[in-house]
Amino acid sequence: MPGIFARLKTIFGAKADAALDKLEDPRETLDYSYQRQLELLQQVRRGVADVATSRKRVELQIGQLEQQSAKLQDQAQKALTLDREDLAREALTRKSGLTTQINDLKAQHAQLQAEEEKLTLAQQRLQAKVEAFRTRKETIKATYTAAEAQTRINEAMSGIGDELGDVGQAIQRAEDKTAQMQARAGAIDELIASGALEDVSAHGQGDDIARELEAMSSQADVEAELAALKSGSTPPPPQAILPGEDGGDIVATEAQKDAAEGTQP
Image (cartoon, rainbow, N blue to C red; front, side):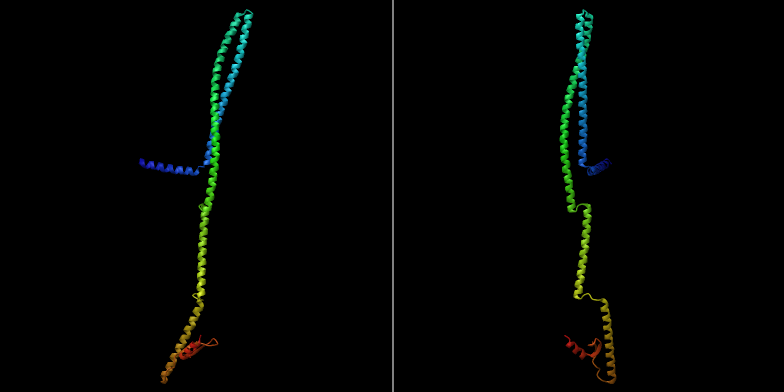
């Protein structure tokens, strides 16, 4: 059973891959990948902007604290001038606290500046890759589009396309039927020219007349022979019905029939 399930999994996987390959358009896939890279580049740019903003804010804080520190320094000097050592000591104490904060902010500023430089370099590299991918993408899309158009043209020219295939089959069937009809018409013309085909009704009428004339001739021969037997004389030769000059029929003996046949060309 595990072997059967494994084979079914392989079969369904192969069919799914084939269906996906048929549905997938490489141009759409390339555009999607390019869009994702642009989104990533935008995220890196936002990161660089955020770090730069933080660095700038720290710089402003450092500047403000340095101004306060310088002011406290001046106040301490004035307090000593006025013999107010207590005030000078207080001003210097506050200045010391500000100096500690300034040093911490400067360390933070250095970290932010290093991070900004790192992100800026990453942004430049990613942007170069995105531009290279965009150029490559457009080249591949143009090549694919040209190949697709060429394939369609080749299919149309060679009749591989389904629609043109159906049209070609219909044309072939029409040509075959036309050739058959032409061959049949030519054969009938040849038979008519050779006399093999004649009017069937005319043949039937002529055959009936010939049979009737032959029956009349035979009946006349029988009557003549019977009369000769009764009279005891030699029976006359059998008679035949010959066509007359005016289109009628005449009764003739065998000798007259032979003479008539001899005179015909």
